[in-house]
Every structure is written in C-alpha cells, then in structure tokens.
Image 1 (cartoon, rainbow, N blue to C red):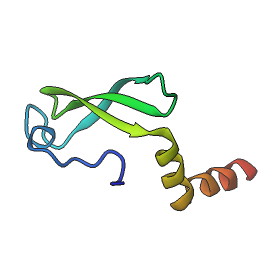
Image 2: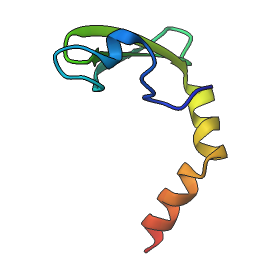
Image 3: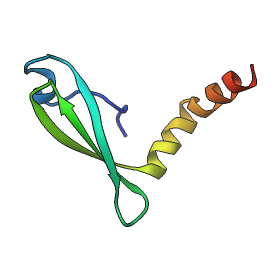
Image 4: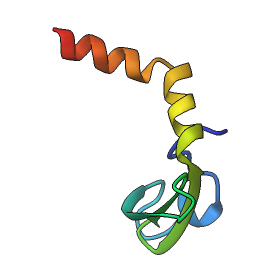
Length: 75
C-alpha cells in the first residue's frame, strides 16, 4: 500500500493549483470495508480513491499512528 495522499498522476500534479489534492467527501461500500474518498486534484479535476479500512488501520498501526495519538492523549 502506498502512503495516503501521495500525488502520482499527472492530473493531480498540474492544473489551476499545482501539486494540491484535497478530500471532498467519502462513502462506505456495503461490504463495510471499502472506503471511497472523493477528492479534488490540482484544483481542476475530481477523482475517486478507494481503500480498505482494514488496510488503512494496519498501515497506521505499523507506522506508529495509534501510539503517537495515545501518547498525546496521555499528556
């Protein structure tokens, strides 16, 4: 799995505002695991990224995301 919010496609990198992507909304598929994130790309396109919620949580666990939040919460 690649890093979240990594711009790769040409339409994400070049447009009215270069190198900018931003989430616009999301839906969850009926399977309860597939997340559909609609996002703006370079301020001139709308795109759809799909990801597994389970995979995203595994990525966060593997990269310390949850531990950092817990430490900040404990302070």
